[in-house]
Amino acid sequence: MRILVPLFSLSLGLAVAQTPPATTTPSPAATPLRAPSSTATPAPTLPTPTLLRFAAASPELPSADVYIDGKKVLGALAYTHVTPYDELPFGKHTVLVRRHGETTTALVGKVLNLSGGRYTLALLTLGKTLKLGVFILPEGTGAAGNTRMSFFNFAQDAGKVDLLEPDYKNARVKAALSFDKAATRTFAPLPLRLNVVSSGKIDPALAQVARFVPLPEHAYSVFVLGHSGGSGFQAVQVEDRLERGSLSAKP
View 1 (cartoon, rainbow, N blue to C red):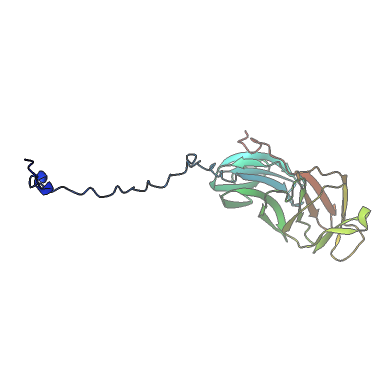
View 2 (spheres, rainbow, N blue to C red):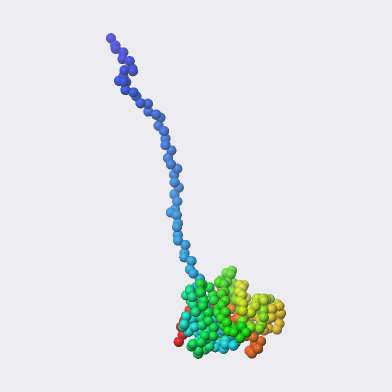
C-alpha cells in the first residue's frame, strides 16, 4: 500500500525565500583620461630698468661737473654734449650740477625718485636761470622693424619749431614743438636729413641735421639748441645707447 505524502509536508515548516531577480547596478560613467593639468608658473615680469643720461643744453654753461648722491659722475660736461644712458637703481637720488672745478657750491640740483623708464636730464637756461629739466621717454619702437626718434627743443628764443625732411617735399617729421618740450614718434627707417624751421614755415633753416640712415629697432634723439645771438642755433643728433658704468663715480 503506497503512502502519499502531501507536497507541502516536504517544506518541514521552513519558509522558502523567493530570490528576487538579479538587478544590474549601472557602472559609473568612465572618467575620460586627461593629461595632468599644467600649472606652469608664468615667467616673472621684470621691472623696467631706470636709464639716465645728461644733455648739456645751456650755452651759458660751457662746462659742468655732475654729482649723483654726493659722487662726481661727470666731469667737464661740455655744451652740446649728450651722454649715453646708464642704469641706476630704483629709488631717490640727488643730482647736483656745479661749474667745472667747483666742489662746494651747486648751480642747480634736483631730487629724483626713479621707478623705471628712460630719463633725460637737460641743463638748459630759462632767461638767465639755469634749470635741470627732466624728460621721460617711452620705451620701444612700435611695430617690428621700426625706428624711434625723439625730439627736444632747447632753443631759447626759437619759439615753436618744425623738423622738415627737404628730400621728401618738406614733409614735417615733427611739427610745432615748443621750447622746453620733447616728443617721440616711430616710423619705418629711411634715410633722413632734417631742417629745423620756425613752426609753419619752410625756410629759412634755423639749424640742420646732416643726412643719416636710422637702423631698424634703434632709437635716436635730435636736440635743438642755442639762441639767436652768439653761436646761433644748432641741431645735435645722437643714437640712444646704453653704456653701463658711464655714470659711475669719477675722481
